[in-house]
Length: 88
Image (tube, rainbow, N blue to C red; front, side, top):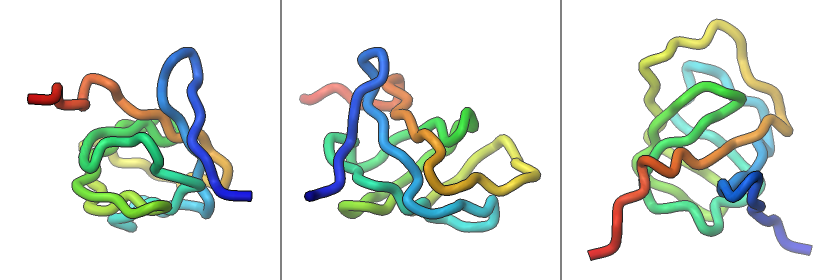
């Protein structure tokens, strides 16, 4: 059975496949299927940007909101749809 992305109230979601420390510039998730190549995500409620992705990893992570605590495996990751560029 493969990994998957889902929709929550019409928003594309996935979950962390391992915990994430604020000093890491990547996030490992269950799946990036359907997510744009670059964009913004809410990770456990915190807005972060990413510059590239693989099947299960968002890389180039930056944020302007410092987080004191790490985020645990299974935390919800939601696409910030305002970061999606229109085709064209």
